[in-house]
Image (tube, rainbow, N blue to C red; front, top):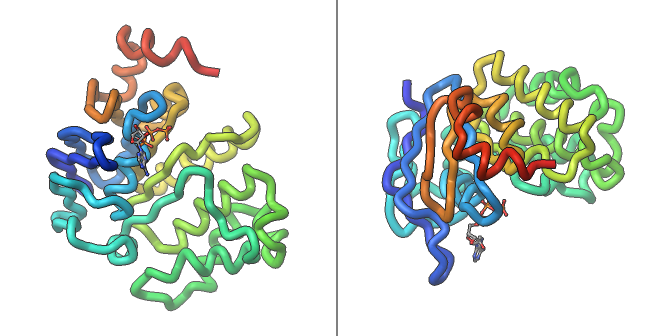
Length: 238
Ligand code: ATP
């Protein structure tokens, strides 16, 4: 079943065209990656899906419904949650308060204790620090918290903007192990990454964005072998 379908998406910031005629689809249970250089339009793609920018043209459908006119909170209520770039946890709120914020746009708020406990089981570090302000967490722990907060919305689709950015290699591995876990449990994910190797390893399919256009797309395992992609990105990674 197609969960997310994007057609002819165009987004401008003033005179800058950030996305040009982008088409993308994601089936339920799939992990799809959008990769590309700085400024290629990856974050803009996620912002358009969650409703944080207004496209000048294009159609975005979620579970068969055109969501183009819905506000961001309405899209969260439909089942889309975003883990923003740079994590953006609320540093002066406690870990637990941050998780509760993630639930605010959810229609059904029963059983939230159960959801919080499930997240603590997944992230024992957060459980230990549940009553601490989020500012005391390490970058990796904040990333875990941002993912936990998004999961509190009980999403059907998780949008992840550069989850590896700025993390130590050990934490990158932990975050990706967690995403693999979610994938195994059937979560659908649209992942934006500058780290092409990581993104292609995790995802089933990927889209390569260049200057706001889809330059290449296909199965991640095929793209991993693509000469063009290797020349453009894989040599330059840290
Ligand atoms: P990065 O990895 O650096 O975040 P990206 O692929 O996510 O890059 P976007 O952030 O989507 O790219 O940016 C796409 C284009 O839109 C870039 O040219 C960028 O400078 C521009 N842009 C992004 N946000 C804004 C904004 N709020 N106002 C004006 N221009 C913007």
